[in-house]
Length: 113
Length: 114
Image (cartoon, rainbow over all chains, first blue to last red; front, side, top):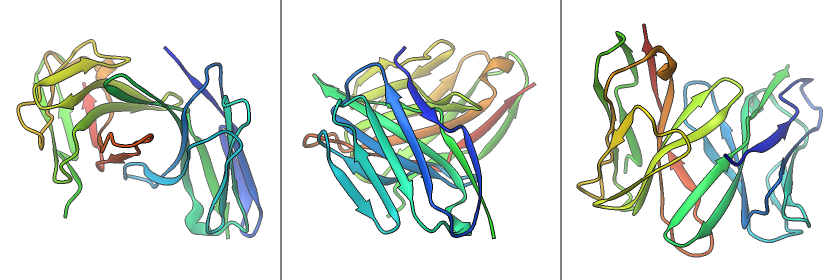
């Protein structure tokens, strides 16, 4: 099946550092979504991107929809301990009667105070 | 407004047992989906439904059945549990409107098959 390559798999950083992660696909997507999953919880949407080249911010988070429509990037500035969790990218193919999200494998972020 | 509610939160089954994972939503969303989450695999789609009475297979449907008799409920049935079905299961809904449709997830059901 279709897969998204997400990197890095894990990151261990100090509080205050900036973080970058990315997601690439062999296929074009119509929409890119970034989710965060806290331990024991379901994923929660952080940012949604709807068109190629789009750059969107949500507080300290900034995400970009790649111009080729095959990749997306998420940056977190000035990390804090509550940023800990697993970050997932997801590409959305819509069309016909379905909306199917394809998820990346996740990036585990650990922040040391 | 509870959003997406999954029960149970934890479950241990013996190989060969059957059970149903419950999912209920109060957002009046048409689309509902079941995912499983395994280490290093991300979230993989098991089954989905675009509305009451309509279901279809996702990426990893084998060993699971679903039905959608109402908009609110989308149960996932394990017919004969196997250790390979040990996973965390997430139910999700999305509104399916407009040019995009984000997914809202439940808190998950952690299933262990021994």
